[in-house]
Length: 166
Length: 166
DNA sequence: TAATATTAGTTAGTCAGCTAACTATAAGGC
DNA sequence: GCCTTATAGTTAGCTGACTAACTAATATTA
Image (cartoon, rainbow over all chains, first blue to last red):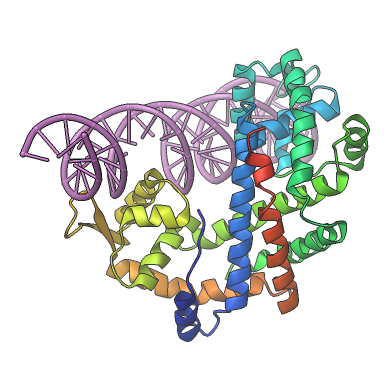
């Protein structure tokens, strides 16, 4: 969901609400709209390989760990609930990309392993993935990338203003 | 879903994939993680009022239009499908915040109207909403906001590299 | 003007996130 | 050593996004 208010909207809200700050709202909307655009583009990218961003992330963790990992670890590292991981693993296992195995020492846990097929899919994707990611950022110079990261950090530190109790 | 790869991961991928560009990946992940953080904070914010970002956006369109609007218009302006709008309207109508009415001249269409209750809710939210939005952006100077918008634009123009056919 | 194509809204079904509640197991405290 | 508490994974049900297919109504055009 994106929003592109017209000039008149800004003028009206500025008139009626003392705390309305056009510059802040404009920047905020530009950020949110940009996020939607980038997310959508990544979805289209992963969709070519039958994956989603979440599934790809999971597979990558297994790929770089080069060993079985525990679902609750995924959840914690990715900042999502265990229930979300269960769902993603169900999908990945259905497509034969990962396999759940009992944990050797704690029967509450599982270990998740990349299958041959999962490994092959990843190795097929990664060159294209990194190439496209590089191109995605190609309009920004090194200095601009650093600036962007810095500004995003400042933005992040403001999020408590939204989520804090009134 | 967020991702925070360790230094070793970067080194390994850099070694194994010629197109892996650490600087691009790092910036890209910073952006995606930041987007998740901001979205989550907005969700928490709107949740206080029993709303979601999508529902708020719909209500705002009606508020500033100051007249009934047509669902397909919403869909087009917000870049979502008509089906998504149907779902949001179902929720908003259930909570008595908007009302569907037959379109006067085209019987395929509806017009959607803000109810008294919807209007009252919005006028209750908006001061807090704009105040928090201002605070969200308060760590960025005017110049930094302009820079951010500019960099986001450059990022947007790279998204075709992700979504274009190989 | 009758047939065809397009548009608007809904419906059904999928996905990925969430919360809350449940089961099984493990760990701690008395 | 038992009781309580905490942890891990799953399940059920919600939301907001999607696509595809459907109905009804309007527009186009042959």
